[in-house]
Length: 440
Image (cartoon, rainbow, N blue to C red; front, side, top):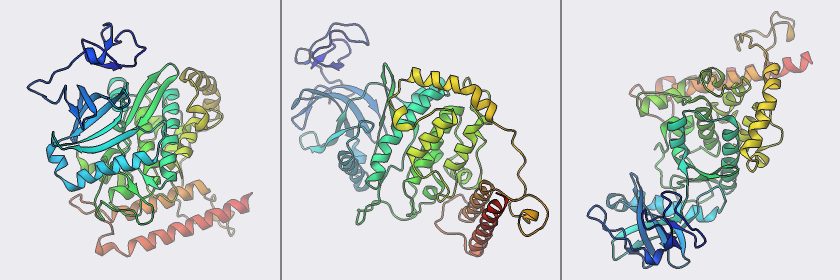
């Protein structure tokens, strides 16, 4: 490995100059680093293997360093846990799980984790992983507010590929957010790396559980309703909801659900519908087509039974909403410039195909002449699906206490409400299907 004498960054042996400051590089062994009063750990070797070169970032769980693995002469990132974190048994177990699970799902769009162990001399726990050049999606959003559709399509497609691999192995990430999507810049566009599998839910049979039933884990703005309530029944569709919320924010510049604090955000997720993205993104430098409204309505459905079934299907829906042909497996490797051209070419066709939105009637009203000879217009299956989600949403409202704390079951006084609502919704769906068939 080579190193920059000025900033102490590390580079492969064939590199010549530091891109950060233009300084000529030399071999790392000839560029010693020394600790400071602020961090004496710099310049040390952990576990008799990892040379600590410089501080990269600080977080709530630990400090991240750039280092060199002396066993294979590779550049790595080393996260050293804070003392209070390493003394907490649950937190420590989550880091062990992050290492264990990440090592089980090797994928180009999931950060590689190499090692997790304790340095007995320094008395610290450390996690070694691949070093990434780039920035978190969160920083991009802070700087740019919203992101061009072609970049979002490529990013969602790559994220879906990584998550589908995890979901196939029965792992639910549970903490998807812009902070945990890392963008590595390349000539063709971003290369996504999914970070932090420490909050994973392992849905495999006999998997060890770290979370007490009813405990809420995740980031409020991107949390599915079933996750907000701490329900043990959540599955990969919770990640679909979170990824849809991230895509919504990338396209519109705002999160789909808001609040002044954690409980109010969760209450909004449980009881409110987001503003359609075409309306929320009107002022955006990249206007959002109305075709995206239907995509987000299904992907952010409160009822997981009618939500988009997989992250791959979500990525496909986003690309198709912009008129692209193919699927996320193709778009994940398509240069972003080519995607931008395809989006621009499809824009007039997408705009022409959008019809004015008609006001929806009462989904529980009498079906009229379309069914059984009465008056009115038959409800379409999509309206019935929306009605079922609204019914499911109403049942969720009953499961939230007045003080804002989530509960796993409805309040005692309203326990009759859920079966009634579900029964009415099922009846509405049945009528809609019959009407739809009769009218064809």
